[in-house]
Length: 428
Image (cartoon, rainbow, N blue to C red; front, side, top):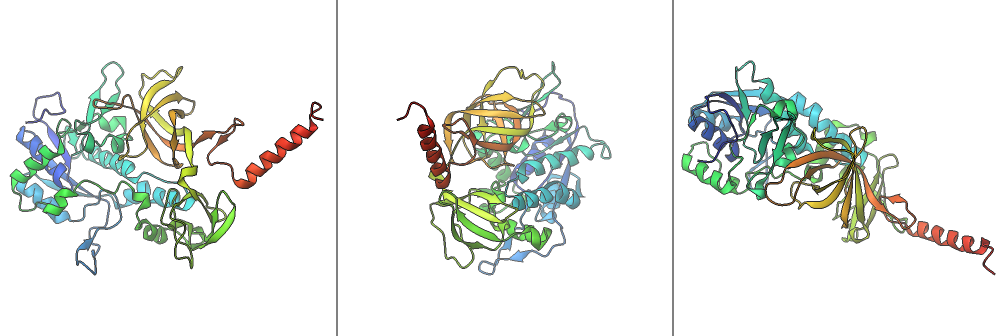
């Protein structure tokens, strides 16, 4: 039996966020086996009475666009019945709409990005903690892979990586409230997912997921802002005049490539770009800038992009962090990327600056959520997290730039250099 992420050996009443999938099912099973009174809570972010869409080719149900949606409430209740634990469904569609969807739409229309998975995870924990009092519970639990530690000297709650680095979920949990985290139990903290799957299969549940679902059961919608289904969501939740049309422009050459039918159909970093009446664009080009006012989309080759610093806003760090000197750390830009070494400089008003040991290729998009760790490998702990406000590099002239010089800007620089030389008294 895995070592549990709890210190009190006494029996507790624990609310478990249930999805009907593997991880939450095993989490509830392990807690019940330890003798705790377990109550299953299914949180509905989508309307349960929606008629599911079917793929015309395969006949399979097309999952709605959204994060951590429960697509089959009946199966969730069935799992709880088989585990012999009570079950409650909680409707939170309005809170998901206000706390996740509206920000997602705003970011897409504004040419920035957003991290729905991070904030839906925060919302789930908020709701579980809110239900503790009416259900007379002592703690809440989820099937996430992460470790929670309590610092007795500072009172802070620390978040550490799971033993299973491939399935670690500290990234999506890094924005949870400290006041909520103190009630959190993580039964899978010390386990690897292959062990969890074995336990799940041994339960032989009638309401179990299929073989194909077991392989892809984890929340795989990491790149939600890049999902083509987001286009429909934006169109349903915004007026047409906000979905500006405009031009596709070659950023470096400042030349027109063609027109497009709405900025909401594009995101920074996008490849495989198509425009109005255009079959395709140079496959080596990527979206590097979106002007929400004019509706213009700028393209360039990804090989022309780099960044050496990153400015963060809404930055949260531990209470015991010394802001007088930089901290050597590692940062993750997305849940599925490797950590990058950097120095962290804490600023005023919950801001921070990351300086990278080596120049990084590509772009970091404003609005992107990033998580800071104290080290690279196993045993890493989260020491901070924030939202990207700006990133870029320092040019030869000492200017902070987000994108390289355009050809016209290079020409202006060369002209200034010529004029400067001619005006010098030492030139004859």
